[in-house]
Image (tube, rainbow, N blue to C red):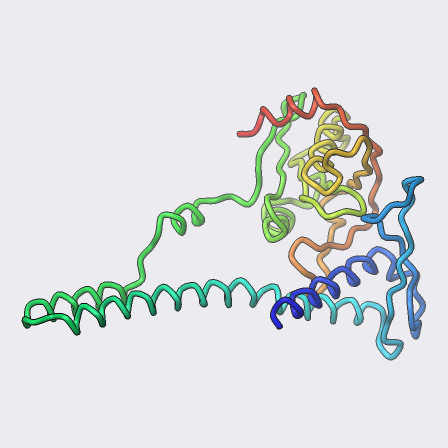
Amino acid sequence: MAHLRAAGALDERRRAELLVPHQAAIPRGAREARVPDWSDLDEQGAPREVVVQLDPARPVSENIARWFRRAQRYQSAAPRIAARRAEITVALERAEQLLSRAAQASEAQELARVEADAAGAARPKRTAARAREAQRVPYRTFRSSSGARILVGRSARDNDALTFGAARGNDLWLHARGVQGSHVLVPHPGESPDSRTLGDAALLAAHFSRSRGEDRAEVAWTRRKHVRKPKGAAPGSVFVTQEKVLRIRLEEDRLAALLRTEA
């Protein structure tokens, strides 16, 4: 049952993400929308068309927000449920061990030790993993060939933290166009972005996306102030305006040199 809910959540998020860039062009009351799917290209490299069914009684933006909310509810709850299930399993195993020791105890001192162990097991402990998580930053840091910092989000939630937490309005923001991938940021680029830094950032955006390994890719870029997060959108999902597009080719030596600069 859980896998069916997970599949449904992913499907609803995918429908919402397909519609976000085209919502302004879809008339109110439409029962369906035909939109390009850049994650599914034909033999000529053009996106295949996808038909998305809509609730005509709701504005397109409300259809999108409703799908994002449903997907996010499941995606937010699923890891907590799995983690809690694992914790309960470990606790039950520990309780069974303590119960077995108590049943075999022949002296009051042994029962006291069992009781002390049970009390210690009940106290939460700060693990090394939690300590590392507290110190973890949500992005990788690279250097362009001209020395500028380039920040790359580590995950969908980290993308949100980078774009809507660490970034400033005039920072450059990049993302591989039409596919899932990391948000990429160039802090403090000035009025006229350096072309080498922009190209390096675009190459990293393509590498840290589902375009990785492709000979060519399209990368959208804009200022951070033109990036918005729709209400109820899933982690990492954004709406971008005033974007420009870079069409890049994979340069393996250039990419390798960039990856070696990671701090």
